[in-house]
Image (cartoon, rainbow, N blue to C red; front, side, top):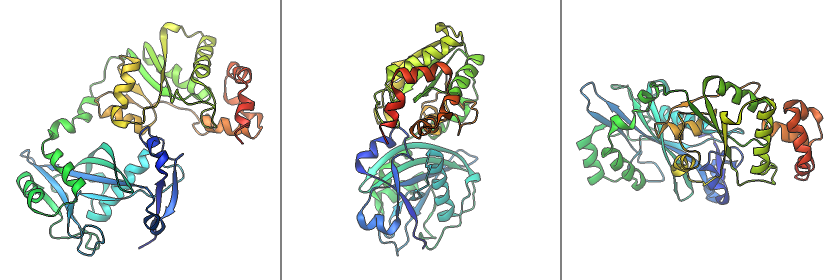
Length: 371
Protein backbone atom coordinates (compact mmCIF):
# COMPACT_ATOMS: atom_id res chain seq x y z
CA UNK A 1 0.00 0.00 0.00
CA UNK A 2 1.24 3.45 -0.86
CA UNK A 3 2.22 5.43 2.24
CA UNK A 4 -0.53 8.05 2.23
CA UNK A 5 0.08 11.60 3.41
CA UNK A 6 -2.51 12.24 6.10
CA UNK A 7 -4.10 15.52 7.18
CA UNK A 8 -3.03 15.85 10.81
CA UNK A 9 -3.70 18.51 13.40
CA UNK A 10 -2.35 19.52 16.80
CA UNK A 11 -4.72 19.08 19.74
CA UNK A 12 -4.76 22.82 20.49
CA UNK A 13 -5.99 23.54 16.95
CA UNK A 14 -8.89 21.07 16.82
CA UNK A 15 -11.36 23.78 17.80
CA UNK A 16 -10.71 25.61 14.52
CA UNK A 17 -12.17 22.71 12.55
CA UNK A 18 -15.50 23.52 14.21
CA UNK A 19 -15.51 26.87 12.41
CA UNK A 20 -14.48 25.46 9.04
CA UNK A 21 -10.85 26.56 9.19
CA UNK A 22 -9.02 23.64 7.62
CA UNK A 23 -5.95 24.52 5.57
CA UNK A 24 -4.52 26.95 8.14
CA UNK A 25 -4.24 24.32 10.83
CA UNK A 26 -3.71 20.87 9.30
CA UNK A 27 -0.25 19.59 8.45
CA UNK A 28 1.03 16.62 6.40
CA UNK A 29 2.41 13.42 7.90
CA UNK A 30 3.05 10.03 6.34
CA UNK A 31 0.53 7.41 7.39
CA UNK A 32 3.05 5.13 9.12
CA UNK A 33 4.60 8.01 11.01
CA UNK A 34 1.21 9.41 12.02
CA UNK A 35 0.09 6.06 13.41
CA UNK A 36 3.42 5.45 15.14
CA UNK A 37 3.30 8.85 16.84
CA UNK A 38 -0.46 8.56 17.45
CA UNK A 39 -0.84 11.93 15.77
CA UNK A 40 -4.36 13.29 15.59
CA UNK A 41 -5.61 12.98 12.02
CA UNK A 42 -8.77 13.53 10.00
CA UNK A 43 -10.95 10.72 8.67
CA UNK A 44 -14.38 10.46 7.06
CA UNK A 45 -17.23 8.10 7.86
CA UNK A 46 -20.17 7.53 5.53
CA UNK A 47 -23.47 5.88 6.44
CA UNK A 48 -25.27 5.05 3.22
CA UNK A 49 -28.96 4.30 2.77
CA UNK A 50 -31.18 3.37 -0.14
CA UNK A 51 -34.92 3.56 -0.60
CA UNK A 52 -36.84 0.99 -2.63
CA UNK A 53 -39.69 1.97 -4.99
CA UNK A 54 -42.04 0.69 -2.27
CA UNK A 55 -40.50 3.03 0.29
CA UNK A 56 -38.52 0.47 2.29
CA UNK A 57 -35.19 1.72 3.66
CA UNK A 58 -32.02 -0.35 3.30
CA UNK A 59 -28.74 0.28 5.11
CA UNK A 60 -25.30 -0.43 3.65
CA UNK A 61 -23.08 -2.06 6.28
CA UNK A 62 -19.46 -2.96 5.89
CA UNK A 63 -18.00 -5.96 7.68
CA UNK A 64 -14.29 -5.46 8.10
CA UNK A 65 -11.95 -8.08 6.66
CA UNK A 66 -10.48 -10.74 8.94
CA UNK A 67 -6.94 -9.54 8.21
CA UNK A 68 -7.58 -6.03 9.52
CA UNK A 69 -5.38 -5.03 12.47
CA UNK A 70 -8.18 -3.05 14.08
CA UNK A 71 -11.61 -4.60 14.64
CA UNK A 72 -11.25 -7.61 12.31
CA UNK A 73 -14.64 -9.01 11.22
CA UNK A 74 -16.55 -6.24 13.01
CA UNK A 75 -19.53 -4.53 11.42
CA UNK A 76 -19.04 -0.81 10.97
CA UNK A 77 -20.13 2.13 8.78
CA UNK A 78 -20.62 1.92 5.01
CA UNK A 79 -17.15 3.28 4.26
CA UNK A 80 -14.46 5.21 6.07
CA UNK A 81 -10.88 6.28 5.59
CA UNK A 82 -8.22 8.90 6.00
CA UNK A 83 -8.45 12.46 4.73
CA UNK A 84 -5.45 12.97 2.46
CA UNK A 85 -3.55 16.18 3.10
CA UNK A 86 -3.61 18.92 0.49
CA UNK A 87 -2.23 22.44 0.68
CA UNK A 88 -5.61 24.13 0.39
CA UNK A 89 -7.71 21.53 2.18
CA UNK A 90 -11.34 22.58 2.46
CA UNK A 91 -14.71 21.00 3.16
CA UNK A 92 -15.24 20.14 -0.50
CA UNK A 93 -11.97 18.16 -0.50
CA UNK A 94 -13.02 16.33 2.66
CA UNK A 95 -16.28 15.33 0.96
CA UNK A 96 -14.33 14.09 -2.07
CA UNK A 97 -12.18 11.98 0.26
CA UNK A 98 -15.38 10.46 1.60
CA UNK A 99 -16.57 9.58 -1.91
CA UNK A 100 -13.14 8.18 -2.81
CA UNK A 101 -13.29 5.74 0.08
CA UNK A 102 -16.77 4.60 -0.95
CA UNK A 103 -15.55 3.82 -4.45
CA UNK A 104 -12.41 2.05 -3.18
CA UNK A 105 -14.34 -0.13 -0.73
CA UNK A 106 -17.62 -0.79 -2.57
CA UNK A 107 -17.02 0.30 -6.15
CA UNK A 108 -19.81 2.88 -5.88
CA UNK A 109 -19.05 6.03 -7.88
CA UNK A 110 -20.02 9.43 -6.54
CA UNK A 111 -22.51 9.99 -9.39
CA UNK A 112 -24.64 7.16 -7.96
CA UNK A 113 -24.95 8.97 -4.63
CA UNK A 114 -28.07 11.13 -4.70
CA UNK A 115 -27.50 13.17 -1.58
CA UNK A 116 -24.72 13.53 0.98
CA UNK A 117 -25.46 15.32 4.23
CA UNK A 118 -22.86 16.31 6.81
CA UNK A 119 -23.86 14.99 10.23
CA UNK A 120 -21.19 15.95 12.74
CA UNK A 121 -17.58 15.99 13.85
CA UNK A 122 -16.68 13.15 16.19
CA UNK A 123 -13.41 12.75 18.07
CA UNK A 124 -12.37 9.27 19.19
CA UNK A 125 -8.77 8.69 20.26
CA UNK A 126 -6.44 10.09 17.62
CA UNK A 127 -9.13 10.28 14.92
CA UNK A 128 -11.35 13.23 14.08
CA UNK A 129 -14.20 11.87 11.98
CA UNK A 130 -16.28 13.94 9.57
CA UNK A 131 -19.47 11.91 9.56
CA UNK A 132 -21.79 11.98 6.55
CA UNK A 133 -25.18 10.43 5.78
CA UNK A 134 -25.94 9.59 2.16
CA UNK A 135 -28.69 8.26 -0.11
CA UNK A 136 -27.79 6.09 -3.07
CA UNK A 137 -29.69 4.77 -6.08
CA UNK A 138 -31.78 1.72 -5.25
CA UNK A 139 -30.29 -1.35 -6.85
CA UNK A 140 -26.83 0.19 -7.19
CA UNK A 141 -24.27 -2.47 -8.02
CA UNK A 142 -21.88 -3.33 -5.20
CA UNK A 143 -18.33 -4.48 -5.84
CA UNK A 144 -16.85 -5.06 -2.35
CA UNK A 145 -13.06 -4.89 -2.16
CA UNK A 146 -11.79 -8.24 -0.79
CA UNK A 147 -8.62 -6.56 0.47
CA UNK A 148 -10.66 -4.27 2.70
CA UNK A 149 -13.80 -6.07 3.78
CA UNK A 150 -15.79 -9.28 4.01
CA UNK A 151 -17.35 -9.53 0.55
CA UNK A 152 -20.20 -11.80 1.66
CA UNK A 153 -21.54 -9.84 4.61
CA UNK A 154 -20.79 -6.31 3.37
CA UNK A 155 -24.09 -5.39 1.75
CA UNK A 156 -27.47 -3.70 2.18
CA UNK A 157 -29.70 -4.82 5.06
CA UNK A 158 -33.28 -3.96 5.88
CA UNK A 159 -34.26 -2.52 9.24
CA UNK A 160 -34.95 -5.84 10.99
CA UNK A 161 -31.68 -7.30 9.73
CA UNK A 162 -29.76 -4.22 10.86
CA UNK A 163 -31.33 -4.32 14.31
CA UNK A 164 -30.34 -7.99 14.62
CA UNK A 165 -26.74 -7.24 13.62
CA UNK A 166 -26.50 -4.38 16.11
CA UNK A 167 -27.88 -6.61 18.85
CA UNK A 168 -26.10 -9.89 18.16
CA UNK A 169 -22.92 -9.30 16.14
CA UNK A 170 -19.58 -7.60 16.82
CA UNK A 171 -19.83 -3.89 15.99
CA UNK A 172 -17.48 -0.92 16.14
CA UNK A 173 -19.08 0.94 19.06
CA UNK A 174 -19.15 4.46 17.62
CA UNK A 175 -20.75 3.27 14.37
CA UNK A 176 -23.24 1.13 16.29
CA UNK A 177 -24.51 4.26 18.05
CA UNK A 178 -24.88 6.12 14.76
CA UNK A 179 -26.74 3.26 13.04
CA UNK A 180 -29.13 3.13 16.01
CA UNK A 181 -29.74 6.83 15.63
CA UNK A 182 -30.41 6.45 11.90
CA UNK A 183 -32.90 3.64 12.49
CA UNK A 184 -34.99 6.01 14.62
CA UNK A 185 -34.66 8.93 12.20
CA UNK A 186 -37.32 9.95 9.69
CA UNK A 187 -35.27 9.43 6.53
CA UNK A 188 -37.69 11.39 4.35
CA UNK A 189 -37.26 14.37 6.65
CA UNK A 190 -33.50 13.91 6.91
CA UNK A 191 -32.99 14.19 3.15
CA UNK A 192 -35.72 16.75 2.53
CA UNK A 193 -33.24 19.60 2.07
CA UNK A 194 -33.04 19.54 -1.72
CA UNK A 195 -36.83 19.77 -1.97
CA UNK A 196 -36.97 22.71 0.42
CA UNK A 197 -34.31 24.60 -1.45
CA UNK A 198 -36.38 24.64 -4.61
CA UNK A 199 -38.86 26.85 -2.76
CA UNK A 200 -37.14 30.17 -3.31
CA UNK A 201 -37.98 32.57 -0.46
CA UNK A 202 -38.89 36.20 -0.89
CA UNK A 203 -35.79 38.22 -1.66
CA UNK A 204 -36.02 40.64 1.22
CA UNK A 205 -33.07 40.15 3.55
CA UNK A 206 -29.81 38.36 2.75
CA UNK A 207 -27.09 37.43 5.22
CA UNK A 208 -23.44 37.30 4.22
CA UNK A 209 -20.50 36.68 6.54
CA UNK A 210 -16.86 37.61 6.03
CA UNK A 211 -13.78 38.52 8.03
CA UNK A 212 -12.95 41.65 5.98
CA UNK A 213 -9.23 41.49 6.84
CA UNK A 214 -9.20 43.96 5.13
CA UNK A 215 -12.24 44.87 3.05
CA UNK A 216 -11.38 44.87 -0.67
CA UNK A 217 -12.94 45.43 -4.10
CA UNK A 218 -14.17 41.82 -4.16
CA UNK A 219 -16.25 42.43 -1.04
CA UNK A 220 -17.71 45.61 -2.54
CA UNK A 221 -18.66 43.74 -5.71
CA UNK A 222 -20.43 41.04 -3.67
CA UNK A 223 -22.35 43.50 -1.48
CA UNK A 224 -23.52 45.57 -4.45
CA UNK A 225 -24.52 42.38 -6.27
CA UNK A 226 -26.58 41.22 -3.29
CA UNK A 227 -28.37 44.57 -3.08
CA UNK A 228 -29.41 44.28 -6.73
CA UNK A 229 -31.60 41.34 -5.72
CA UNK A 230 -32.36 41.93 -2.04
CA UNK A 231 -33.89 44.89 -0.25
CA UNK A 232 -31.42 44.62 2.61
CA UNK A 233 -28.18 42.84 3.47
CA UNK A 234 -27.11 41.81 6.94
CA UNK A 235 -23.32 41.71 7.12
CA UNK A 236 -21.70 39.46 9.68
CA UNK A 237 -18.12 40.18 10.75
CA UNK A 238 -16.84 36.65 11.30
CA UNK A 239 -14.19 35.76 13.90
CA UNK A 240 -14.93 39.15 15.41
CA UNK A 241 -13.01 38.32 18.58
CA UNK A 242 -9.72 37.90 16.71
CA UNK A 243 -7.27 40.72 16.02
CA UNK A 244 -3.58 41.62 16.09
CA UNK A 245 -2.43 38.48 14.26
CA UNK A 246 -1.20 38.03 10.68
CA UNK A 247 -4.44 36.30 9.62
CA UNK A 248 -6.61 38.72 11.57
CA UNK A 249 -4.75 42.02 11.98
CA UNK A 250 -7.75 44.33 12.36
CA UNK A 251 -10.21 44.61 15.24
CA UNK A 252 -13.93 44.15 14.74
CA UNK A 253 -14.36 47.90 15.25
CA UNK A 254 -11.84 48.66 12.50
CA UNK A 255 -13.50 46.18 10.16
CA UNK A 256 -16.87 47.76 10.86
CA UNK A 257 -15.35 51.13 9.98
CA UNK A 258 -14.09 49.66 6.68
CA UNK A 259 -17.62 48.60 5.78
CA UNK A 260 -19.38 51.78 6.86
CA UNK A 261 -16.87 54.04 5.11
CA UNK A 262 -16.89 52.10 1.83
CA UNK A 263 -20.69 51.81 1.69
CA UNK A 264 -21.16 55.49 2.52
CA UNK A 265 -18.68 56.43 -0.21
CA UNK A 266 -20.87 54.52 -2.68
CA UNK A 267 -23.99 56.28 -1.43
CA UNK A 268 -25.53 53.06 -0.12
CA UNK A 269 -28.07 54.07 2.51
CA UNK A 270 -27.55 52.74 6.04
CA UNK A 271 -31.17 51.55 5.82
CA UNK A 272 -30.02 48.99 3.23
CA UNK A 273 -27.61 47.18 5.53
CA UNK A 274 -26.84 46.20 9.12
CA UNK A 275 -23.49 45.09 10.50
CA UNK A 276 -23.12 42.46 13.22
CA UNK A 277 -20.13 41.08 15.09
CA UNK A 278 -20.10 37.27 15.10
CA UNK A 279 -17.45 35.76 17.38
CA UNK A 280 -16.36 32.15 16.91
CA UNK A 281 -17.78 29.61 19.36
CA UNK A 282 -15.93 26.59 17.90
CA UNK A 283 -19.02 24.41 17.90
CA UNK A 284 -20.37 23.49 14.47
CA UNK A 285 -23.56 21.98 15.88
CA UNK A 286 -24.54 25.17 17.71
CA UNK A 287 -23.07 27.75 15.35
CA UNK A 288 -26.19 28.39 13.22
CA UNK A 289 -28.31 29.09 16.29
CA UNK A 290 -25.49 31.31 17.55
CA UNK A 291 -25.54 33.34 14.32
CA UNK A 292 -29.33 33.64 14.27
CA UNK A 293 -29.36 34.80 17.90
CA UNK A 294 -27.10 37.70 16.86
CA UNK A 295 -28.44 38.77 13.46
CA UNK A 296 -32.13 37.91 13.77
CA UNK A 297 -34.31 37.13 10.75
CA UNK A 298 -33.15 36.78 7.15
CA UNK A 299 -34.35 34.94 4.04
CA UNK A 300 -31.14 33.69 2.46
CA UNK A 301 -27.50 33.09 3.30
CA UNK A 302 -25.11 34.08 0.52
CA UNK A 303 -21.63 32.59 0.80
CA UNK A 304 -18.93 30.80 -1.17
CA UNK A 305 -17.97 28.66 1.81
CA UNK A 306 -19.19 25.10 1.24
CA UNK A 307 -18.82 24.51 4.99
CA UNK A 308 -21.13 27.43 5.84
CA UNK A 309 -23.61 26.44 3.11
CA UNK A 310 -23.68 22.88 4.45
CA UNK A 311 -24.38 23.96 8.03
CA UNK A 312 -27.17 26.36 7.04
CA UNK A 313 -28.66 23.86 4.57
CA UNK A 314 -28.84 21.27 7.33
CA UNK A 315 -31.09 23.72 9.19
CA UNK A 316 -33.27 24.09 6.06
CA UNK A 317 -32.06 27.65 5.46
CA UNK A 318 -31.98 28.75 1.82
CA UNK A 319 -28.41 29.31 0.60
CA UNK A 320 -26.88 30.84 -2.52
CA UNK A 321 -23.33 31.13 -3.83
CA UNK A 322 -21.80 34.56 -4.14
CA UNK A 323 -20.83 36.01 -7.49
CA UNK A 324 -17.14 36.77 -7.13
CA UNK A 325 -14.50 38.44 -9.29
CA UNK A 326 -10.84 37.46 -9.54
CA UNK A 327 -10.98 35.52 -6.27
CA UNK A 328 -7.22 34.83 -6.11
CA UNK A 329 -6.47 38.50 -6.67
CA UNK A 330 -9.11 40.05 -4.44
CA UNK A 331 -8.29 37.97 -1.42
CA UNK A 332 -7.50 39.10 2.11
CA UNK A 333 -4.54 36.76 2.46
CA UNK A 334 -3.06 38.00 -0.82
CA UNK A 335 -3.44 41.63 0.27
CA UNK A 336 -1.88 40.97 3.68
CA UNK A 337 1.04 39.16 2.04
CA UNK A 338 1.64 42.06 -0.35
CA UNK A 339 1.70 44.48 2.59
CA UNK A 340 4.03 42.13 4.46
CA UNK A 341 6.44 42.13 1.50
CA UNK A 342 6.26 45.89 1.07
CA UNK A 343 4.61 45.52 -2.34
CA UNK A 344 2.48 48.62 -2.98
CA UNK A 345 0.27 46.69 -5.42
CA UNK A 346 -2.03 46.03 -2.46
CA UNK A 347 -3.39 49.56 -2.78
CA UNK A 348 -4.99 48.73 -6.14
CA UNK A 349 -6.95 45.87 -4.55
CA UNK A 350 -8.81 47.94 -1.96
CA UNK A 351 -10.90 51.11 -2.27
CA UNK A 352 -8.89 54.30 -1.80
CA UNK A 353 -10.74 55.18 1.40
CA UNK A 354 -9.91 51.74 2.84
CA UNK A 355 -6.20 52.19 2.05
CA UNK A 356 -6.37 55.47 3.96
CA UNK A 357 -8.06 53.81 6.93
CA UNK A 358 -5.46 51.03 6.97
CA UNK A 359 -2.76 53.69 7.25
CA UNK A 360 -4.76 55.57 9.89
CA UNK A 361 -5.09 52.37 11.94
CA UNK A 362 -1.32 51.76 11.61
CA UNK A 363 -2.28 48.59 9.76
CA UNK A 364 0.79 48.50 7.52
CA UNK A 365 3.25 48.49 10.41
CA UNK A 366 1.01 46.12 12.34
CA UNK A 367 1.02 43.53 9.54
CA UNK A 368 4.77 43.93 8.93
CA UNK A 369 5.40 43.30 12.64
CA UNK A 370 4.26 39.70 12.13
CA UNK A 371 7.25 38.80 9.93
